[in-house]
Length: 370
Image (tube, rainbow, N blue to C red; front, side):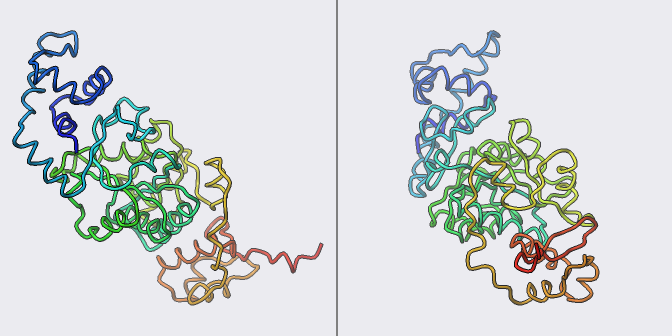
């Protein structure tokens, strides 16, 4: 990890000022050499009093012993840094004035500049339906050589990362804490699994930074900024995932939302996004068409045979539309799990969901008489 990147990341200056400085100088070391080593003031703005304060902040942040101690610990943990002028810095982020000037990372950061990136975000208190959807979407698009971006939070984020890892894809987790501070702790195994499978962990916060609540909205702008598309799986009315969606809209990104049960609190946010113009996720063909890439259908491989509750549900549904309440009474499957299984059957093109929560089998083409 570069000690000058670390120093500049903790300098108490507005991010827009840091962006202007890094664009004027070749790298963070040159900023340090000018201001701290040569004791020269840098003209930052037109106000001389503000210049004095800002130049003073540059010097105050230089605590060599402390910085060297952090760098030594970071070296043992394989933590590296990248600044806005580096070739490794994610190109998608460079477009924005509020992009973090310095980021810290562990793992392979290069693929963020090679493949398309899709963010999958959602509620921490996700339902079985949401968990299944996040896992399936992540798994399928990662099989098509698309990166998965999320925030390593509980719920949808974790299942999005996990679906990608299990499918052998590349996933990047963006933290709202120092890169060496795993939060929440119960995602520690997933954290190391992401790295073991060739993924990446990144953060704009210096190593050792605790997961303060105000860090996460800042983290969300990186998740959306890295991504070419943001998919919201489940979100309550005040979910942090909606903040990510709002930021993505400001950044000019496409938003896709997964429709959910009208009586589910965790679907109120996603249903509202669709009402306001987000693309509804109906099938993978729609998703890949939105991204303007050819869809290589791998989800159906070795996955056409139905078993267990899926077969029971499929056998109950016929050519006449059947309401969700009737399916629930006939199968006695937990209602949240039932929605997840019905969603899987839709993705396999076995059934169709009609307006009003009615379901019907997809007609067998071999039985259709021309």
